Image 1 (cartoon, rainbow, N blue to C red):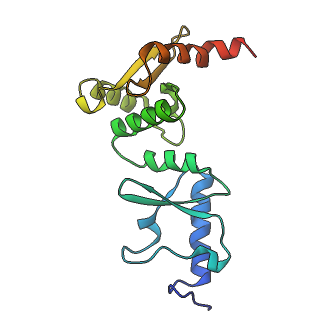
Image 2: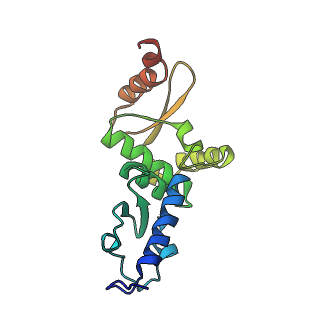
Image 3: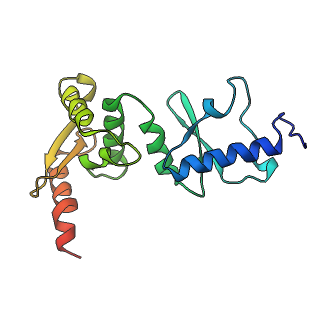
Length: 176
């Protein structure tokens, strides 16, 4: 069995890479701690001819994903979704959408992959956020079709968020 300089065999690396790819096919990233012991170095995937496995950092945690099966942006969202604190997941996502893309976030995305927050948990998280000063910048707007969007007042004005929500929910569909 050929050995790698970092003491992980090529066969083991290939099996770990396959595990990461399978998780990515399911829309998930793999926490580093699930693949490696705490004191193990991150493998040199390239030495085994594995070019698609990448490492991302989210807070204190690290995650592996396959660049062939998942974009970096989606991997970041999937890593964020691993957090058990729904309020924090929602707030970070809304702030990123408002800051990076200058758009409000449709609330329905939190029900879908990679977040998959059940409706009752989502409703509870939104209620909890309303009274928490850590999330005071996260506001709601509604489009004329009654779809709800969230935005961060740090990056978007309420009127701007409302206009963008209306365009995303109604206007874009009516103006192909």
